[in-house]
Image (tube, rainbow, N blue to C red; front, side, top):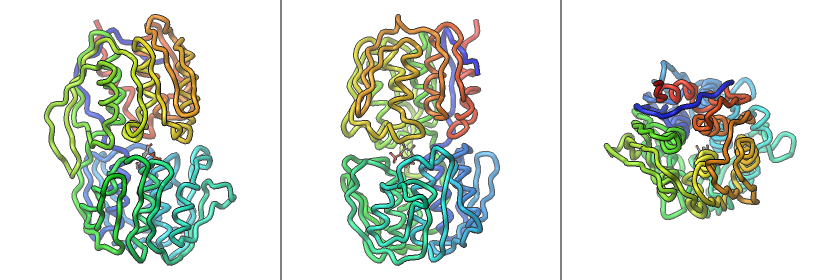
Length: 428
Ligand code: S3P
């Protein structure tokens, strides 16, 4: 696909619903009694995979545009699936659903696409086994396909070696079916949407620092959930507004949960001009509109406990670093290697294609920003939606037309991405 260039950007954009929150609304709605109505639901391929899995376990789910109604059947209301459940490309579906399947009184199997079958599941198999779950990696390689058989679960205090909301949520969801309190302590606090939303549905969940705990067997009741706009999707417009000269844009209805807003902290440390306006709370999540104006950026250092709050935005931040003056160091981010692609390799490869000085490291990368050295490039998405969107933003400012191989993978989290980006381009 040919990517657009832009002299300047103007106007406003409303990003689709948050992916993490959309998944959880389906899952927790299915495990609740009665109706759960979700508005501004993200109709991306990943969330549709979650819907498909629950429909295959007897849950009626009506989907009209970005509104979903889930007819929940309670914590013990799922039915045995007739076939292997398919999580598609979605790590969130695979890992969170594994926690739920471990607690069921029926056997099941769960797999996904080629990428999912390579992503590490040992990180959930270990704590689930410690809880007494009867779960196996079918090829014994620590990856999906996974199989689950009925077992009695006991609560554990799990110290996770990685800051991962998928691991934390998997263990907490299994904890709904355990015989005592389950707690998870992380090296740094990951996104807390599970804790917030499960509590709203009626679960007894508490958080203290980087530890989250849950008591078993609550009665969950259906809810109305309004999904805030996804800050991970907003990140592409934040970056575009900052990088493309003479730009000024408004990004509406963006979730700014403090466990997710690291992109704003990092961008501000690069000298970005971003203003939060209209702050409000919807469905227990902080939301605002973001006013972004272009201007010179400088290098920064990103690491430590900030990483979980911007892990999905690192490809976009790396592109911003290439357009900034000076050195940017991204460290403590080895998790990048186990995302939809190895994002250290795929980001560095694409940065080099556009003439940037980028050096991969064991836990991140170093980028020596020099905007004058950048030039047009033929990019590859490596079938990773966040890589495709990050480099489509880079292409706006690379003057001559760039191309993207595998551009359509944006379907995973943002089907209308290219149209929304194009809508901001000023044609003179
Ligand atoms: C997610 C958690 C993160 C993130 C992913 C969505 C979630 O993964 O990268 O896109 O919804 O819980 P990890 O928990 O593995 O860091």
